[in-house]
Image (cartoon, rainbow, N blue to C red; front, side, top):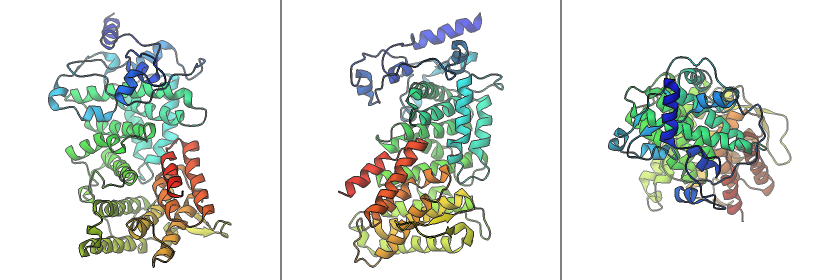
Length: 473
């Protein structure tokens, strides 16, 4: 009886569920004017305005009682909007605004508690999709496989992490061919996750590792869901936590894994926006062991060098690119990149197989996926240092042949049957390879790889393809 009254209070605080309107309004439980093509609420908040298709009940639709227990939304009381639209909204709140939030202590919405005894079928399937899909991408440079092993274990006890995982999985599925019916599932789970994250900030005893992990999962959702908006906003929350909690490469356990994922997102966003990274390479607090190291450690090392190259090239304006200091810094990064390459064991550089294709690409075999991703990043850095600062190098340039070599190598790696996690990691290298490679056949082949990554894996590449097409006109 007590629980029933608590659940009623939750619903009253949130308002009645909306059975009409667009997906975004329904997931946030606000009234939709159903104006086409974009309703007033979505236009005001700059949201995607999509209307649900008619969906026949299936194994993805669990019984109502089970579904409600798994995804009862957090209700909060206070002066601020308790329906944040993104992690950006949450992390832009002031301390005074956060102090006005007081989560209801309903057992149905506790952030962390005893081990979950039962979950509905939809949740179980979304957790499986995550473990065998996106989690493997996240662990590309983590031999401990924290996001495949530790994070799902945390989801047993943390509703915040469980909902964040399910939101991310559902969003990925919705982006695949024939998966659009899961868009409403993704939006609803995402909305619940944001409310849980907001409630976690209001609770002083909240597990900080859970908050950071959920923030990374939700920023990953946002990078999938809204690639056309300001990419930097999507990792703002993670940047805030990383800096405030002094998370760096020296951390251990889940925080170390989360930091490694964050810096990869930071690098990708910087490359998309052609700007410096949010977290400077100096803030990584790195130490690189000498002697024999794991491929994953080499991968994180080359990412750090990539961050240095990005901050060097995209911080400098045209006037400073002619200064002696700038050329000295470029030479220093180039030297360290070559030292990294020369210290690699031969097998980590990849072994060529057979003859080149008619376009000129060769099949390269790598012993582990991390080695393939690391080598593609190495060639990407070379393109950044040799070509990107000049923008459009000409055939008569002294480095032109070297630029073509590195662009060809990236294309060859992508076409060499590497893992999905490695393919996702080398989306940005593929963009620079296609940007500078010579020959329409080679460019078209790389465009096809980028298109396949989005259609088969649900990882957004369309913006990069469109940029390449504009460059080629």
